[in-house]
Length: 398
Image 1: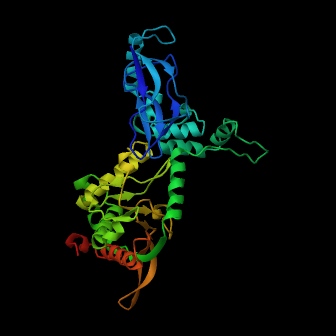
Image 2: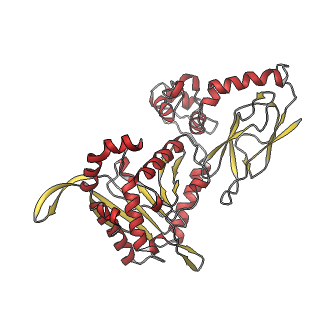
Image 3: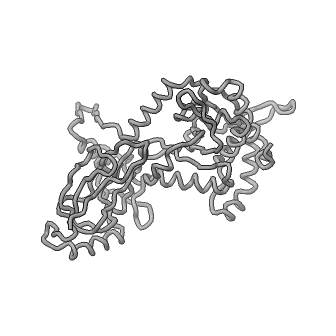
């Protein structure tokens, strides 16, 4: 029986996707649910599993081609013969055993496979540090930093490579995600009246809480107590007081959102992604920390879903983890505001008439001046600052 391999139904915000690299070739036996190819949208990389076990008899869409929802890209014969002449039933069990044992292809996450393909690497030459020797993104990056790995990647580059003495160049197409990010950033600059207001927060009270309770917190909840959960709670408290900062523009209307879906900017091998903490006001500190850790892990492995990256009423970006002291974050349309966190730096400050050393962090709130007045922007950022400097406010909701 011939079975069609189709692209899954994409979300309404995703019109098309790109096929990355087929993991199988025509004539190969595939097991049910074995990954056939990675599909890249402007939000995530999806694994496309085989709908049935059998032999891959035809590839309709090749690597790099664009596809749409429900499009047929290949055919599988559930009763066919593989290239060696074995029947599908004879070889499928062996393929399934390879998958269960973690074969080389199955052991690579979509993010790792993408890196390996982009740099023309041989996975067998990369030492894996993950579970059962699984290759992680960090393993690939470490391999690329080795002096011997650089010439190999350069020499294996596509024809667009320009080799002129010791000044090599390589032309690489932008990923669909990078193209989409570029489009959205330009859109934000061209359509919104973006202004940024700054303030600074004394992070000592939050640090004291973390120092006092971090061990008990981790033992009780199984996750470390970080900074981001405090910022999420502080942002929600400010958005409650100033709902216009949580609103968005739709044509000639202003939409006031009665919920708080906070986007958390996360770095991934494919670029910046912003998964959404749905109903953040209803989540505990522990639940927020667990979700953020989960987002970070699955962003590296390319496992975030389209739904998790869609929507959001407000975003938080933490450039401080990379050492940024101050920046002006760009809006994430159709949101009207975004908070930028930065690195905490010990500085002398005046406190009760005395000069003391405190860990200070610059905060930046970029906002759409079309609907948010400077007063509301400044006061909402002050509300976040006050909540961070006196965390008890978050418990008392004052």
